[in-house]
Length: 368
Image (cartoon, rainbow, N blue to C red; front, side):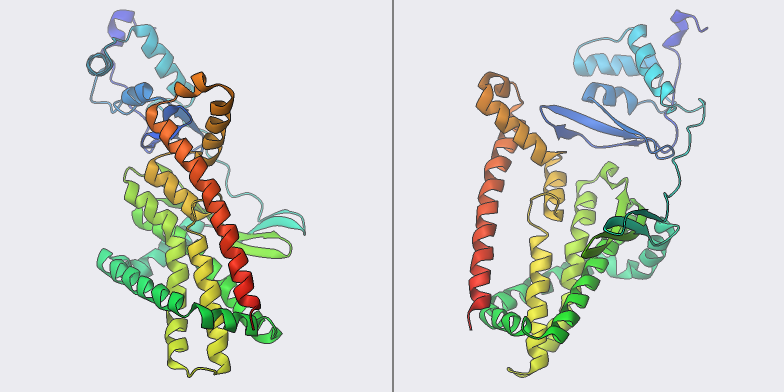
């Protein structure tokens, strides 16, 4: 056993590949996520533990890290503190030179669930499949190209909003014609599939990984899914936002050629009416998905933008505590109180606005 006087001379190192997240607000606390990509195990640590763990790079001794910790937090660490931290990391097999971690179980069964509800894995190696797609599409993922497309999307949506009356009339017309209605539904399903692949391609572009691609069903609904792993640990906020927003981007991109086709046809043409309904429903599909309510992508985007995890349940818990015990609620940090109160009120208002918009849409669609 190493003599206590020599312990602080050690230069331990985290195992290569261990992931550490940026700081995230979780309830009243700030946490960092730690994940072992080999075993898939993840847990939370506080800012002080993160300060220490993030400096275990094999080049600094425990004494040097401890001195930096004392300057930062005004408290020196004893050997017992180090034994507890290193014991935790060693138990979880996160230190270099220690026992190898147990590999994460491979992909589960190709199919799970029942005929009424379940999933079906479609590819054996989702990450490799997405990597091949990314290599093909990489030239289109340059900032200049993406920025130009965003401007085109904005122009398209403004134009469609100005034509809302015509588009709602086209939708009403479509609802009475089963064959074109089925065609539009099929195209919208394809758009959802592209939405999911876009999340995976964006993740590959910024350094994330893709765990699984498949089908998920709750009859009569059947949709594609693409499970993105590890992108929550990316250090840059904009990369996380890019992954979360890629799906809506793909939905709008899918509509562009149909919008051009719609614009080229004369008013009253049956094909134009089908395309008008498709553009209305497709735009709603993309834009509603950006609403910051769970489980929509807009909610994920807001969480990444604010660096908050579990925003909706944490807001709900804070508001309940505020009504029951204002003193305990006042113990939350100022930023947490503002965020949770703001999201609680804002989400309630947003739900009411969405209900009003839905009612207005039903009235407009039903109008002859």
